[in-house]
Image 1 (cartoon, rainbow, N blue to C red):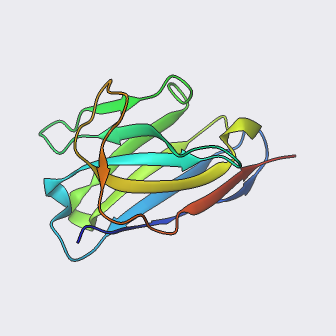
Image 2 (cartoon, helix red, strand yellow; image 1 turned 60 degrees about the vertical axis):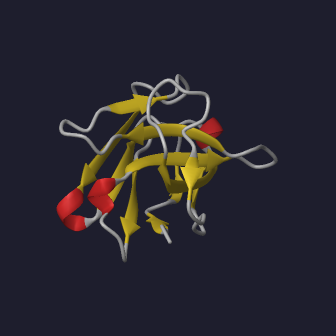
Length: 125
């Protein structure tokens, strides 16, 4: 079963940065597209970025994070990262990663496998 573990969250001031990590175990991480999702307090979980598993690792970002967040992957370390810069209070959420069926301008990245516990990101002064 595909399962990923998120880490790297924390409390940061507006304008600050964090780097989230998504680690995989017990499967060949390089075979999967991976997406980052977040669930703000009282709201539904939404996909915000994804990265493909093809040569060149194409990426996609939702408008809300475009230009501020960068997704990348290191298949040798079985890890996908989300570098988050210029953080805003509205970025406050629990962040999750998941293997996804598709990556691009789709309304739904199609996550599959079990959700991990996520990592809390709080942006506040």
